[in-house]
Length: 492
Image 1 (cartoon, rainbow, N blue to C red):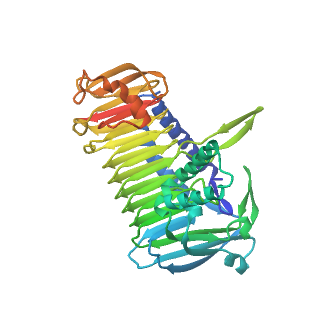
Image 2 (image 1 turned 90 degrees about the vertical axis):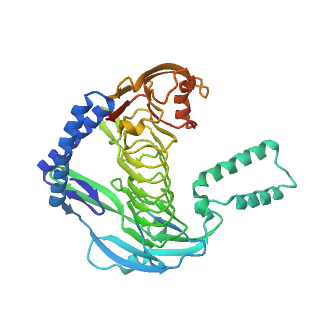
Image 3 (image 1 turned 30 degrees about the vertical axis):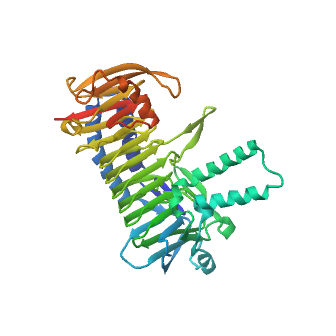
């Protein structure tokens, strides 16, 4: 079995699957060796370069030869509606499988594809009718939170009710903290607060709305697979004209966005289902992009700033039982590519294999346990750039002239730092420093650029702590992997 899908599974020839698994295993081992610095980087990169086209060729063969085996049938219907955006020109879409396309039409056009898993060919009209797209024009405080003015008015009314029996100072402080925490949680959605917005939701997909699960089992010579699946499914394509903002909620069964002329926000809030193999792909957005805990695969051509917080793990983790021992495992990290960002990039990942290129503004990346590869083809903006990791490999590749005017530091306190830069350009940096925030002392080792560093300026000793805290304000590029490998490759 290759992988499960809605209502069944894809199968391929056993020898083809074994060959594919062996290549994947070798690829994963090489990436692990590269990240940990166990093998010479040039040797690993050479083998990776040889393996990747073989793997791509094998993937194409698998795609051509895979066979879908399904004990159920998938019936489909399509429904289309159009709507006018309200005066605020803001749209909120809640769905797990969404395709958003920017277009020049005067209205929003929605195409809802409904799918029903059935045992036979008999149409089930009532089941399809239960899946419907609902449009509302309203204030969505329950989804995006209240504006500052709305919250203040509500608190004023609440305290007025308590006039006869006022709250104590301690109770007031606890109440204030509680309210502030709620407000902070909704802060990323402030542009949608206190406004009448257009809401698009799909009804009929939850148990409360009549959706039911069926058990789907498949047996083969190599074993069997069995699981429960919802009968009703839906995907939504929305054509959006230029507007003031689009918020996409759910987003865990596959998202594609292209050509949007509006600020874009994505969040996993409101998700009802997920596909561990799905990804979020975003291309050509005119406006800022904000992403909160959805599985980003590719982001390119953004005409604005990008902010990403992705600290939730969306890989399909599991447990094995063998020899009286339970093993809780996690698959390799996902790949993520971010290129061609005209504005600033601020990103916080728990772990991804991250590729970065052509970021015009600030590069501020924290990738806790994944690898990060930044290619710099032109001079970075004079800003406090940083790439930091707890244990992941960080590699920065740049032409020597591109970084010539920038203060650069590449450091680790428990890992390894490698560079091909001549010592006359990048001097060794080995020092011990304290941290005024947590009280710790750290031994830092690595390199720093000579051209932009004053040997009598000792403020650079404080730089690692400031960078890790995110409080550094001086222009420069700081690369820190606490216990991983840092590689700085310069081309002449």
